[in-house]
Length: 344
Image (cartoon, rainbow, N blue to C red; front, side, top):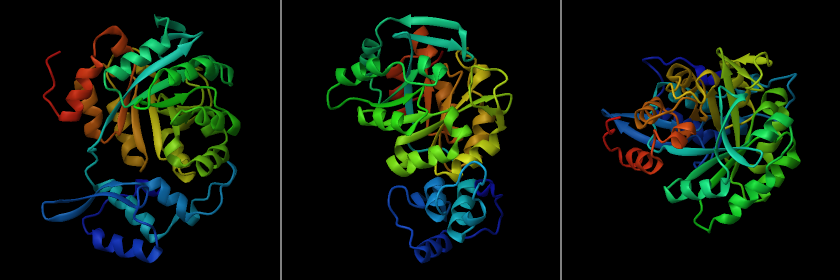
């Protein structure tokens, strides 16, 4: 895949990238080729390259899973953008912490390693929990309809609507996952006031569906969930023998349809507070131009700093907040202001 292009010492200069971009008439706007430029040690570097929208812009109409249109992605601006994505410093200047609210039966729960048989109930009132996260300074809240994810259809729409209704105009943005298997599901959820949806199983089974959703709603409103088990992306994270793809292949497929945000969960670490899978996250950051949201095992500010340094755009945090091992307001302040990590 193009985002895996190896760096070389005699690579193209930033000026060459700009010239080729100008010739290709790619607009320099949010979501264009270059989002942030930074000079370091006297040399120009691309700090943040938005790869997937560019790739999407340079290819033709979506194709189904039977034919992946990689051949027509090979254009000079795209190759150079991907080149710089691979050689530039990946530590991001902005990083968002997304506290998670997992819903099952109207309650706030957490699963361990994605196992429904290992559920722990933490709260009876999801709306109150969302209010607490908002008061702590959360810019985003990650809400998962676990019943919907398991059933393949939305089950917690009323609870999510109640969360939205409880906020004023300065509310956190909501990212919602679970049971979104059709275009109508996505349109309904976004139309109800959700800012971004997360598509999981459908993304691997039917990439044309994801492509259509991105074209209709924009890449900033469609995120993809990759649940990783034993180095492979599985469609249903709670099923041990679910159909799987190598991580690199899954990321390539998602890049081809224009995905710009990918939530990566290490299933073996999810809900165990054992720390994030840094090797997995590093692989994902370096194999795609999409923003990577780290999920699974995060327990401390040190963990958040570690995934930020890798180049992740954010982290989804669950059990650590409910068990009290991580204070959300302190974490947000520490990450935002680069304060020293408190002793833990």
